[in-house]
Length: 332
Image (cartoon, rainbow, N blue to C red; front, side, top):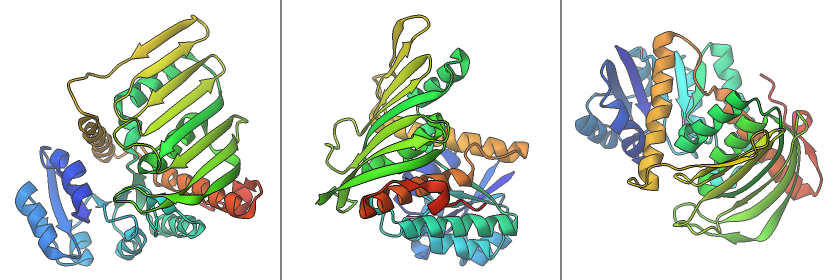
């Protein structure tokens, strides 16, 4: 029996995590929420026990604690949990964002680094969700890159709604590797988005440690009913284009001179594909616990995403390139 504890029982937990977790054989659930009534409502709906405090939750000996609070509260929750030394912590994204995911600041990187440093010192394994890695098109893209020996990434371009921002940064880092230097510009005007608040557009050029170059634009200005991101990844011997949560994957293979298009089933909405990506992410994570192996996506992936964002914000504010390893070292 795997024991999974959830901290935070809001909409993210009840819509994206618990529909899958509650149906898994051999998984026992426990809940903590600052508003106990919300934890009790989750337990009543999905099954499981309710803890009156974080200490009670952790002292029950869960195999992993899923930290599903709002990103604005995640730092505080993580530090409180680390004082209790759970076996594993699994974080929603972004790792820390005190003013919301569209407004990550340099201080969020510092706080995120502190969380991982304390986890390492306490012997607590950390993991991230980053469920966009588990979309059909992303999984297929990963298979193609691995199987066809396309070589190193050479160029990247991305247009991203802030609703997908941290996920798409993670995809860039996943496919192209760690970023070494960024140069960014921000708009003067904020663009609003219901549920997120205003944020300025940002456009950046960057170079990876493996010498790939790229550009990325973040905005709240994309229509929410149309594709929320477009990502093009060029390699030495081919390139990929991905669009939105349920979009097509286009493949250009230089060796075969073929243009291939992979489509997902059209009998499901983009949000059903979104929920399915959470199920795959959790399936992989539970599998790693059962096998006693490392998580599919380690906690450092969340810190690398914040490092990239911190570099963007400093570059835009100061009007100069930022070398990430020098100005925002991971120190892990």
